[in-house]
Every structure is written in structure tokens, then in C-alpha cells.
Length: 435
Image 1 (cartoon, rainbow, N blue to C red):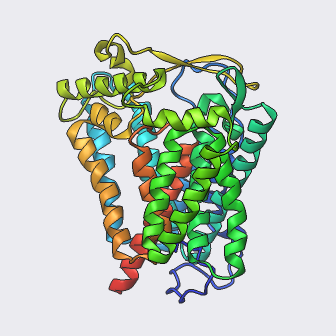
Image 2: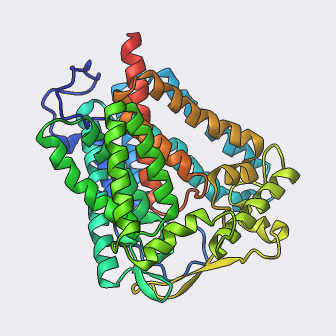
Image 3: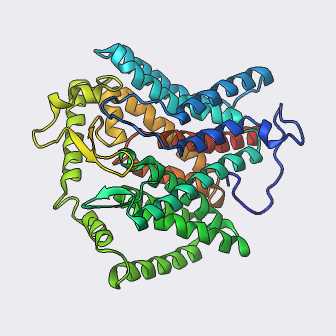
């Protein structure tokens, strides 16, 4: 279970270059851990006018890719053939870049897309040699999620978070208001890992897992992120269903109790209750942010209709937005927090990954994107129910999240590491089974 099962696991065949007793610090996976850790470093930005921003985590990811390449060349390790699925998004984004009206303007988007969906996942696959590597990387994600959850909870309690209404009560962790979904994303990944441990563990391990799960759940609530709530519910539902009917009944009972306490009693702030209630009103009476999102979705579809096969090119959405956008769409959103102050952020994407790929890479790009994630789903299903808890939870969360969010900001690098972690688990099993 991606190295999180507390019970002993059967030994795996040793990797070609994995020496017995190898110290943890000398493993390539340590660079993946460093990449995750550096995502939590605050990145204060004086201006949001530029869509190109290199973070410490991006630099660490570059180091990870370089180290993985050197390691693969030295060990002459033979990768599983199914890793070739990463070629599909690489070819698709390259074609979209070469055929775009502004090739130079599309290059940053090409590099970013290649980094997130090809280079970093492949580097993680190469860096992971055994179950210890998976545990180290998963532990780094858990630690990052714990730090963000504790800080976010304190921000909401002390009024030092991002602005929501007239108060700074929104939990955003180290990411600030300029990346308001950052904390919720990292904490969601940690929640999936801890929930998998809780569902698989026995005895005192369950009690140990319940504490961080409660902390992360509280932080997610205080993030006021409706999208993260919905994605976590879908991921939890999938994981619980894979765990058996007894777990389903127990979880359903616990969920009813929690909802009754929050909404039916004095627990829960007025802001939280309004935020929950607004989910049901998204289609009937959408607020301004949801209304803008619908308009941006319409804009992306209009771009695709005029450029059906290869789209307008990476980073082309921002350039073509005003040409295709309905009149009611505002071109920016306002952010405010005690660290960065008030800033106006340009809307550079449709806030929907599927529509972003469709508008910028056309049907070719969307087909490659869906084939990549579809292959991961198939490989995960083939592993069986309980063995696939983490992978199934991550895939369910990410594919749901892509319905109202897209790549952007430092947390995207952690998504890329998680993608590589799930891929290494799935394709390594196939390689061992065929041997």
C-alpha cells in the first residue's frame, strides 16, 4: 500500500543497484523528499503580473531529475515498458507548442507541463528502488501536510490567514492568499495517506492515525475550500468502499454524527455554515467566483472550437482570453493576507484542467492526458481492493479536483511527486509479476 501498511510486507526482489544496508540519506528518493519539503517554504511575491515564477521546489525538482538521470545511466537499470505512457503527454504538448501562433510565448508552458506530467514523475519512478523509498517520500508528504494543517488552524484561530469577507480567517498555511488552494491541496494528500493507514491498520495504529486525521480534517474545514471538501469526500468514499461493507457502515454513521454536530447544533461558525450551504446553490445562485468560473469554462470551449486539434498552445489561454470571454467575466480576482497585502491576480486559466488542456492542446492533448490517467486507473484496479487504497484515493481526489482547478503554484510539484509515487508502485508490480 505504497509503504504505509504497518503490517509486514513480503520482500521484493532487490533492485540492480540497491546495496543492502544502504543509508537513507544516500538514496535518490531523498531529493524527492527535499522537493516536497521546499514546497512549504513561503514564497512572497511583490507582483502577480508575471505568470512565470520559479520556486525553491522547482529547483529541487530539477536536481531530482538530474540525479535520477545520472542514477539510471550508471546502474543501467531497465525501466518497465509501461513507463512509456509518459511519452504521450510529452508528444502532445510538443506538437501544441510548435503549432501555436506564439512559439516563444508557449515555451514556458511547455516546460511547466513537461516538468509536472513527465519529468518529475519519471524521476520519482527511477528514484524509487524499494519499499523504503516509498515510505520516505510518503513520510515527507505527511510531514508537509501536518505542518500546513497546524499552521492553517492557527491562522484561522488567530485571524492571521487570508481574507474572507471582512476577516482574515481563511487557513492558507505558508502559501498565502496568492495560492489560496495550496494548503488545502497538500493537506488533502496527507489526509489520503493517513486515512489509508487508518483503514488498513489494527490495534493502536488506528488510534495513532486518528489524531493526525482529525487535525488535517479540521484544517481542511478551515480552508473554506469547497473544491477540496468535495474532492476529499469522493476520495474517502472510494477508499472506504474498497475497504469492505463494515467500514462503509461505520464511516456512514460517523459522517452523519459529524454533520449533525456541525450543522444542527451550535458548533461551526456562521461563515462555515454559509460556505457549506453555498455548495448547493452553485448551479442555482452562483456567487461571483463561481460565475467567473462558468464564464472561463465557456471561454475555453470557444477557443477549442476554433482550434480543435492542437489548441492555441501552452499558456495561450491567457493571451486569447479577452477575445473569447463573455462580457460578465472579470479578468482578475482580489487576494489579501497579512504577509502579501492586497493584490489583484489575473485569471490566466479556466480553473478546469480538462478544459485547459482542451483549449491549449486540443483533442490531441486531451486524449493523451486522459490516456495517462486512464492507464493509472487500470493498473490500480488490477492490484486489488485493499492494496490500492492510497493510489485509488489519490486518483479519485486529483481527477475530481481537476474539474474545478488546474496546475499552478508550488503545490503542483507535490502532485507530480505523488503521481510518480503511484506510478512506481503500479508499474513495479507489473514488472515483478511478469518476471
